[in-house]
Every structure is written in C-alpha cells, then in structure tokens.
Image (cartoon, rainbow, N blue to C red; front, top):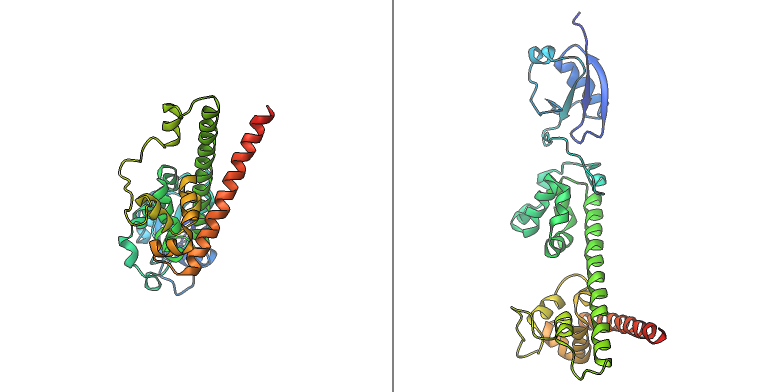
Length: 295
C-alpha cells in the first residue's frame, strides 16, 4: 500500500484550509474537494499555493516535500498571489466568488469604471489614489456588473459602493466647510471698513473671476460646470457652491425644467433639495456670525 503524504489544501480565496494525508493526486482531489465543499462532479485543478504551479501527475506530486500546501480550483477559478490587505480594505477580500460569465452582460467592458475595477481587483489599496470622478463612476456602476468585474458577491460590491459614496460625501463636507470659512473671512474683511473685498479674499472665494474652461450658457445663464453637476446622478445640491444654489432657487421650477429638460416632478424634487441645502448653509453662516459677535 502506498504511503500517505501529509499535505494541506485551501480554496482560491485562502479562506478555507485543511490538513490531510493522501497516497495520490486523485485522492488529494477527492478528499480535498470534500473538505472544501466541492461537488463530486466538479472538475478540479491542483496548483501549488505559493506560486500557482499546476500539479498534473502523481510523479510530481509524490516528489514534493511533506506538508506542501495545494490550492484546489474550479474551472472558472484562477490562482493569484497572496497580498497583504490593510488600510481597512481586508474585509473586501472575504467571501470572494466567481460569477458565471453567461449570467452577466459583458458589454460594459468599454465603460471607464471597468478599468478602475480591474485596478481594484489587482490592488484594493489603489482606491486611495483615485480621483472623485473615478470614485463616482464606480458608485454609479451597476452593482451586478461591478461584482462580476471584481469577483465579489453582489452584496460585497454594494457595500463597496456605499463606502465609496461615504468617502465622496466626506470630501464634499470638507469643501463646504472650507467655503463657509471663506465666506466668514470675506464678511470679516468687509466689516473691517473696506468697501471692496481684498484681493486675497477674492482669490480665496473664487469671486475674482470664472474658473478656466468654464463658460456661461447664453440661454440659461448657468455656468456649463453647474449644468453638468445638476444633471449628475447623485445629490447634485451637495456639489454646488452657495452662489449656484441661490441661482437655482431663484430661477424657479418652470425655468429649471426648461433648462434641464426634466419633467415637473423631478425638477421640483431638485429645487426642494437645493432649498434645503441652501437653508442649511445659511444657518451655518449665521451660527458663525453669532459666535463671532459673542467673542
């Protein structure tokens, strides 16, 4: 009887690992597959866990040292090197799955977010270097397609999108806080006896001129940048400056409906959101002025 070789097996995510002793490669596939929850009808490929070398015959299997660790793969699974996950992204590597390509529309491969998803698949830490536009494109992607691109379960892809949206919201809050401080400094400059804001204040608030590349739409009177933000998919009112919010509110529903080409219900919802956001910012300004008057 052939001596049994002690070894270890794991699945492709390395989340499951077992030790066993088997006399042959076929027995390794059978016993290892049973431990890992594979079906007996599944086609299994055995590779070395550390470098992905395929183990195809008993001769090679038997010459390997004892306690070698093998990875068992289904037909649609593939070996990948072990990478250290940190910075709060380790949870995203758990419960990874391979989705049947026949069940997912792959026409999205030309979408900009697809390349970003591939970057994340190779290195989740790359999210730190992505721009807000990149993050927004990942948030706006369909969760089923994003899950397919990343090799995640759909729930994990949805969790990732929620996390990225929170990152975007936090950045927007930081911008709004900076804008509030700039408004305060501008008001303080005027109250100091100067009829016009100082050049430094103009530069800080951006009121000294329009941003390069922005143009005013001759029909609507809006900046092209503002129109692009308004037609965005997610909370455009949080991405507008206070001056833009005031303009949107002053235009009214009828004008905004014509400018955006939206129906009255959608336009009214946007105006209500803008009014609420503007009121919140004005309350913040009043709070800062109140604090200043008390000091």
